[in-house]
Amino acid sequence: MCSRKGCRSGAQWQLLWNNPRIHTPERRKVWLSCGDHREWLEDYLQTRSLWKETVPFTESEASANEAG
Image 1 (cartoon, one colour):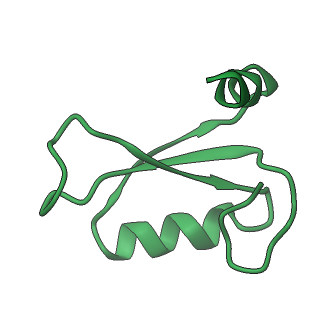
Image 2 (image 1 turned 30 degrees about the vertical axis):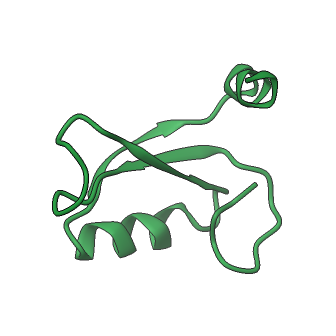
């Protein structure tokens, strides 16, 4: 489900980010995004110098997250 407040759309994208003040350089936190909110969430993270990359979110990842 999309991480944008109030959005209940299914996730299509993973926005990988890291706060260098509290996370080690290799750690990646993940926000999920629908197609409509990808740009907004990327901009939010980029403005704060937290964004690392955006990659597609697939059903196999969703199944793995539910199983583990």
